Amino acid sequence: MDGSCNREMLSGYLANRLTLEDQLDFLIHVDSCSHCWDEVYNATKSKHPHYYKTTARQVKVSKQEMGEDEAFQEPEEVFEVA
Image (cartoon, rainbow, N blue to C red):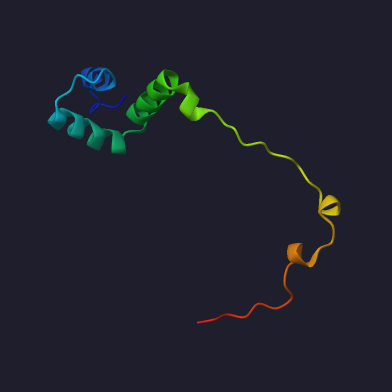
């Protein structure tokens, strides 16, 4: 944490005990402080892990498996349209 970080504001924000004005001040600080942003992110992630699950599946496919379809080949000429 740097010198402008306020641990009490951080814990108050996470516990939802800050006034609206203090919340806004803290969010302005979080916008420029990567350490506080990480703290808020990690606390939110541990509180709501279902929002952070990755559901996408990645499959490696070779060009051979995709075939030599023209849609996957780069065009020979590119024309710029204004």
